[in-house]
Length: 267
Image (cartoon, rainbow, N blue to C red; front, side, top):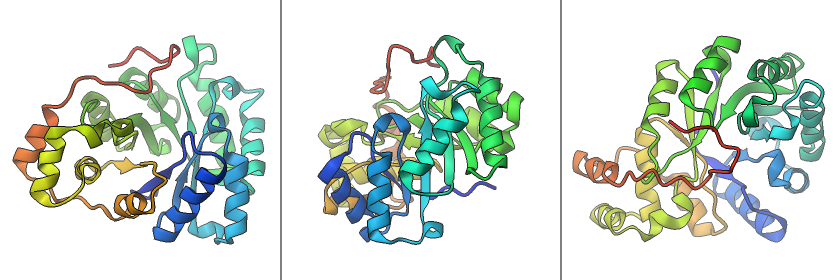
């Protein structure tokens, strides 16, 4: 079984002093899962920060993602080794294909085969996928087997609930990791979520995160505030009742934030 800490610390768009503060504070409050990616261009900074904080490597869980320009057989392993150099570590705990290859320029079999080689060489403990549709999940399973796919990391929040993809992954025992779980701040503005939060004396963010945890998803919220980082780390499932869930599910509006021009045709 793949072990992925349920609560992770997202680092998308974080750099320089903001990244340093978020990472140091997040580790102080208890986070051990740090999520980054080659395209975030902060792996080297994260490596420097972690080295300065002197945490034992075995007590950390590091996830990174292979960018689309590095998915070919000739580039994938070298790009992963560069990520390891930048992060100042000998291995990743989890390495994902960040996005399916645009227009299938690099066949998925080629990329996943290289990722399996990376795992066999000890460069990563587990491998997985991100932003994959149902058809792409099924193709990945046909190539390496569901048992070798630790997670599908996808955008999930009350305004984009991605139920079909989640159901497909769960059917095959693949964990789903929810990124942008606060819809880049939209969760904090919602009156419906605000009413649920008031009812339980929790924050709007807590409502969304506990709703995701109740679905047995991993969460990787991002924050630079100590108060919010502490709250994100300490949030638990089991708070919401059936009425709350019904009201949250009614918020679905296919509001997709991460939708670049090379994205697959979504389910």
